[in-house]
Length: 376
Image (cartoon, rainbow, N blue to C red; front, top):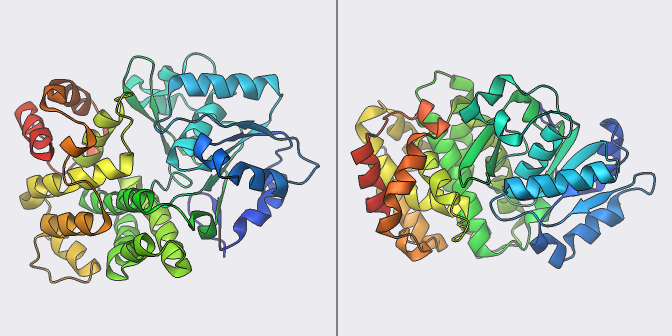
């Protein structure tokens, strides 16, 4: 199956076998493959190495951190240039794909990476990047079809880079690559996809097609119980297929923006000592923000409840908390190592996050503090 949206995802079980075909179609002969130590340790990089035809000369950067950093971008870019690469592959979760996007950007853009962040007016500065292919191995970020990349800078800030030019030229979405993903990562990644769908729907931007895609993603995750099934049985191919599709749909939906959940999780994700999982953060934060937004989104909670297969009168925040408990998500941020003394720094970061541009209710500084405190 080939989907038509922003780019051309090859979406099917076994799609990874088409990697040489996709490289050829994109005109890439010497790709830099950005991946992480975890995938390398279980032989996934060897698998992709063996699938790429000998007519291509591949280089590997295998040190992508859990939250990609400016330092890692510089290291990968140095390898890209040293090996005369002409394209990039992001192979892994959202971190590896985000790193690959930043490398593809800086491979043919001058200046410093920070110059191209949304915070620095970088959206208009980004022109066509080097060719890039995304191959997700988790079902959560949807980075393979999104305009964005998140990088933690040397100054400690976790910044957004966004442009249509950062959408990968092609994506190989093979649900079989997620089979065997541990339940804890399945849960956190799946809640990332769900949060994308929900926050996109709640965004005040008027974009009915994007909302419809988000509704379908929620149906796959909750109504069809795909997330619960994938957590309980990692070999369930139908559940894995549905979760990868829902992940892709979540990113398609958030073309209309995100909200305060992501502003808060981006602030927390910038902490390089805790190295917190983005999707798990979203899961923990989502109920508090849902309660905060409740009276500012019209009938959207009812629509979301219907997509979940629930009665329209349900307490949406409570439903998310019950789901979190069932799939093993921490009940609060304190369990993840976050303490109250961190709140001032977290609030300062959250206030400046671009996700606030599309949140249905913008918190005041005091309200940010209360939201973080409630989550802790």
